[in-house]
Figure (tube, rainbow, N blue to C red):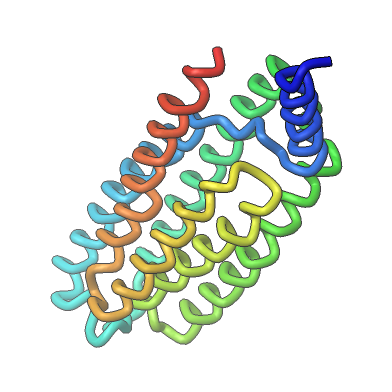
Length: 212
């Protein structure tokens, strides 16, 4: 057996270890579509906020609602629709990629990925609802960006490692957004929209297309 054979064996062993400990069937296309959904949702949310601004004269003041409005419910519905579309799209495209790669959609690595992603994400979601309950709507975007970023970093140990860079970018963006209360929707659109499109596009071009 030559040295090149040994190197090939080592490479194969590393690939098998990665497949057993990491879920590598994430779809770049699902990231692109999730970003597009977020931008569309942000546009509809902006229309609702502009409508509330015109009706109430001042929709936000110091990061708080100036008066009670049904716009809150509408914004939550828009957010729920965006999240639902992103989840369904992600599951469908990831399942298709896993089947193509000869992998299981829900294996031990996928379960670890899901748990480590959901712990910070659910915590951030509950915290965001508490903030909304207190009327501090201006902090919703920073909080969701920061906790989503933490979720990506936490889950990156069990999937493609460069997911952490998406997480770090959202954490930084969320921290910056705390200094610009009232412009949270634009930061939200950049973090969940533009960042996802850029990340998903790079992932698709640099990884998925080269492995076809």
